[in-house]
Length: 254
Image (cartoon, rainbow, N blue to C red; front, side, top):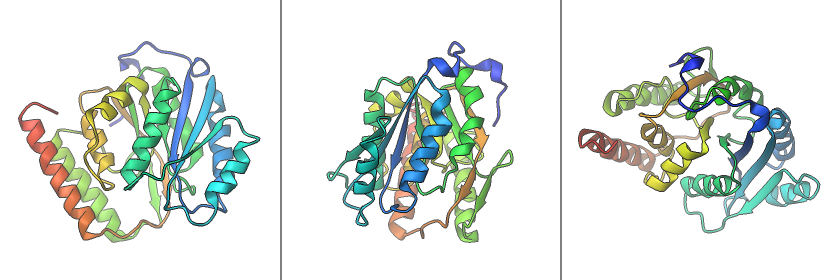
């Protein structure tokens, strides 16, 4: 879905007048952590200001946390968060969302570490930010997006999950599972306040479902990384949460 740029529901605002907060959960990325953060900050320098929030927890065992703590000593735009209370990947993201909202930034970008998401793709989001959209989602499967190094089985699951989620939830996106996305602060605050119930990667789909009545756009992204295998617990969580959201839609709660 690629709506025209003159239909944003918020007033248009120049990028250089907006503050951006970036959220990146990170674990064992020692070799790429500093180059990745440096490039994100460079690509985001078109904003009035940028704060990159990187969230760590006990999944980090290779010293990446210490590397970025040292880097942050000379980079005031980087905020390193230690969150040992995290119990799932969703906890890490939500911790980052809350920290991003606390900065007062008008927009929040979510981007994965290790260059699985390409910081250069941020440029495609900017016209929709300026036009006043609520949510902007990266897509690997439409509009020239791509996914390199992803097994065929994972592609089938992602594409099939997108079709099924669109059918049951009334969304119309080409990629319901991507994690490269931007939110206007009130849109993200609405999602976080509502509560994210999924404990697995289905939470990306859950968030998109909560945006179904907001003004949304998709932009192509270029994903580059082997994906983790899909476990039985992940599949059960996805189907359980999808069924819950479908029931919410039927009851007028979605």
